[in-house]
Length: 314
Image (cartoon, rainbow, N blue to C red; front, side, top):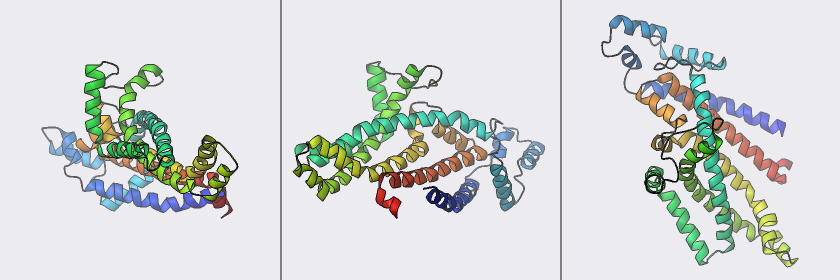
């Protein structure tokens, strides 16, 4: 396993380098000049020249990239052009918020998606299977922003059950923190539940037709034991892989949901940075997200080898 992880990490290094090149290069293609934003309405030429010199914006792009990578290797992602705070500090402040949202959304998706997929596969061709597929298709089709707005109107405005927006740190008040994150987590979790349901159903349909499941039934085992111990256990490999990748998508793709519910996470941070031409923040957030996604892929592959003995033998 250690040799496998070492090989995968070595393969990840050129991928991370390519990501850094794309992040840095595409950032330069964004319209607007961050220095003009920082200089204010007066746009004093001396101040503009000073800012360009301070942030090395007069250097050639390859020189800027080499300096940026050199700072990253030392753990320095740069300084925010707008707030003058270190980007690493901003990421350390916002990342736990998005991670909490992603974990809660993933729990909701697992609780809904996997049982629905197992039941749909077991009752293939019945009205239960039909209803489960219709609900899954609806979950994939309904936009998150629309569902979020409707939930705010119903749950918060009409019923008053949960706060409409805002965020309370988990360390400050765990109960209120969960209450504020429950609706956005549900909005994200329903879409993921639909994806998990379809993958679980597909994996279970293949496993339920296998010889060892028929043998287990021939031995007189109960259907619950057959489904959980024999079928679901062997169908977990693709499900775990999909779940791991979905978690990475949550970290990178909760922008609209965070904006709707005013959650100060990764999504809101990068949106504000784009509007303010804050290059350093955008580059740091996108790079961290890409690296996290790569290592989640490695984690998914390692989990596959743990769950599937045949892969370990290979």
